[in-house]
Amino acid sequence: MQDRTHKCQLGEPYSFSSLIGRSKLPLMMASANYCHVPDAEIVKLGLERPSHTANIWAERMADGRIVLYHNYEYQVYRREFLKHFAVTPEVIDWQFANEQMDKEKIIFVSTEHKSDFDASTYRMTPKTTQRTKYWAYQFALLQRVHNDNQDTPIIYVVNDLDEQDALTRYAISLGFYIPEEGTAFRKLEHIYNHPNGLIIVSKDEFVNTIGEYRTDKSYCYIWDNMDVDRYKLMWRTLPFKDDIEDVEAAELDERSLGSTAKQCILAEWPIFEHYYSLMSANSRDSKFYILEPSLDEYNDIADLCQCASMTVQPWEGEDAYKQTIEEATEFFDDGQASEFDIHIHQKCFLGRRKRLVSLSKRNPSAYLGTQRRLHCFHTNRWWQVRSFPRTGYLSLFLYSQVEFGYYSA
Image 1 (cartoon, helix red, strand yellow):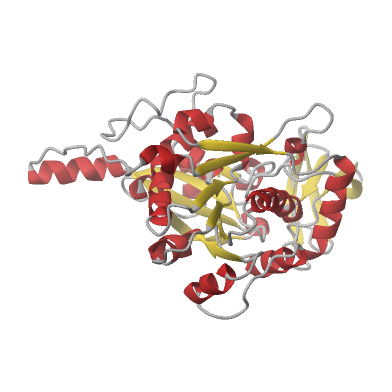
Image 2 (tube, helix red, strand yellow):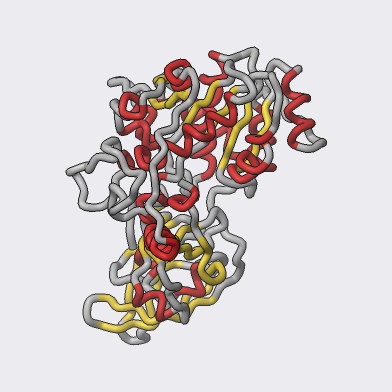
């Protein structure tokens, strides 16, 4: 599973404005936080495709920059290794002791769909630039989990610690106790004696340190997301071809020719079973909750993974939701990039006529596309385009504020 989930960075991060005129990535990522990168785009950026690369994709970071990653065809490496040593692999069917009891403590958390108010329609993906909406939703679910485990301290596992300060301040505002000083191990000891104790760790920190921590105390482990959107690009075709570990559980989803969220969850499920084995090695009373947003889409996923599930209603109605968002706004940065006073001179095609665009405003890194509405990613606004034939310039007028990610340029 480590081979399946491993990724490598390709080149350095790109600012959005630096890609304009060099690549189609700005257009390809106009309404997405991930996208597959064709070989032609790799050449345009002056990069080379590493040997045995399976897929190359782009991810938008929280600060607006774009990073390219790739993964390897690990099956090719494996076959070459086995051929070199002339050996045949043997699959070991391993399982946990008291397996049925353990899996009941791995719990998928999803949103309850109600006819009068369906909160899931407001849910964001982990890579969204609308950090306020994403974290407010995740913490609303976390609070519901805490209500069912009020005497158990929480270990909240997130992708990375880039937003640790904001997350810590927001959690404290909700009434949680987070130790300020000490190592991860010392913090674990501190929160155990506090009714609302919580620490926030990265996935790498969990795997390398927390997962190896030995104690007989029970904790409530909450995993923020399962990186489903990224794995859909890493694993563009599932189940894995000629993979000796593949089982029937990784069934094809006929709704799509590519990998679906459901397939990715099933494909990566063994590694989450392994994570729980690290937790339960300390205490059988520990519970493992997973808050992956894609779980809202599948009612049968817990049965397929043979684990438990719980549905919660984060808010009673839209007014309560809006109040939560308003209160959380002061803690998070909703995608404002770090670039300032960018001047862009880029040819823009409107129909069959060329126009020269001169854009000189604060944070105006807009993609200049083929339509008469341009999206400025740094200010998250749409601009209406009007042309002036005599001068050959375009004038940009503020069109309307819209939610990021739902419209393409």
